[in-house]
Image 1 (cartoon, helix red, strand yellow):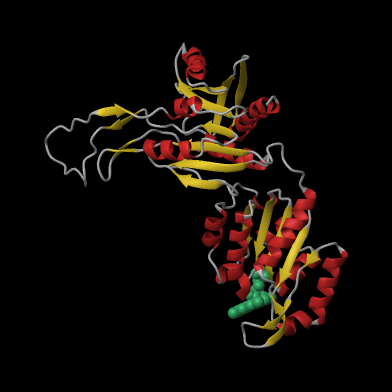
Image 2 (image 1 turned 180 degrees about the vertical axis):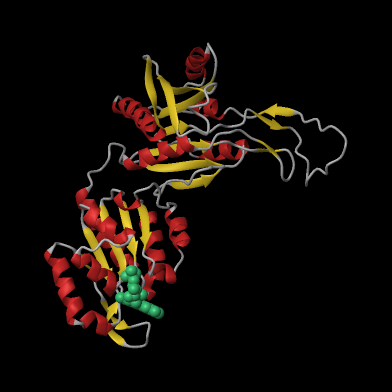
Length: 387
Ligand SMILES: Cc1cc2nc3c(=O)[nH]c(=O)nc-3n(C[C@H](O)[C@H](O)[C@H](O)COP(=O)(O)O)c2cc1C
């Protein structure tokens, strides 16, 4: 798995870059699409952002770090701009800021490809170590034929695998299956209303992303996420506590299970069929307890498996309750976060936790959730190394 910046430029073959994005994501890569204005005349940027589950963020989108820059299709125009080091849009700026390998797949009319100016630019790029795939010979979209077709997306994906496979060492969680739940379940009151909670899923998503970066085979149980799921993980939608219970128990054999979702403790006993019409009468709802998924996983656990729960507690005895929860649920770790604080935890970008294990507690100071995820997975790796 690698972080790939995918440049798409303004040729007919831009539509093929949609397939390329899908294949790269399916292969487990983290894909950041960057379209030129020319490309957007052919395909919408939103299509790529949806396929990659990513959109450019922050004030410096051209400074995103990546293991590999791929430009496919590459127009004659952008080929010339890359050869001469121009930086007049986000893609060419990113290309100048990129210090890793560059793989390009030119696509253009055969006469444009054969023009001495284009061939001189191709030679310049080759001299600088840029890898040029194609163009392939064949019938061109405009009806002419010759060298000018973009090579097929599958060929590009295969070459990407070779380039990044050689570069990236396998992560510490390579070969391990990791199940993580994220978000907050919603328990139906009727066909349109629900009882829910404020969990956004950021913490679980950060855990999934970090585990994937460490090489794990990650399945994410997604309960109404407010943030996009990371690339390269298998996503299973689990909107209600019952869905989450069913899907988690079906995957109870995973090497590592991290239950980070806020699963409803209570669910309406008798949800109303259809939408309850508004009237002047009070609406009294009886709630019944849901199944305890963490406890069920703890009872069924197999030797060598690592089980992690979360305790969203508040107040003075919160940490003590988290410690008791770890023992009661037969979990290896319980991550305690104080939900009485507004600046961390639920629906916040940062968190501050205490990781409770059998041997003690580790306080992780306030940090972005990805860093908290890294600290939790360090503990998981420590436990795995003992088995
Ligand atoms: C219908 C149509 C198809 C085009 N196809 C290509 C193409 O396949 N390759 C190419 O180099 N230019 C092609 N062009 C020209 C580019 O769109 C044009 O040079 C544009 O400025 C490229 O901008 P970009 O490189 O910033 O994306 C095409 C133009 C039109 C109108």
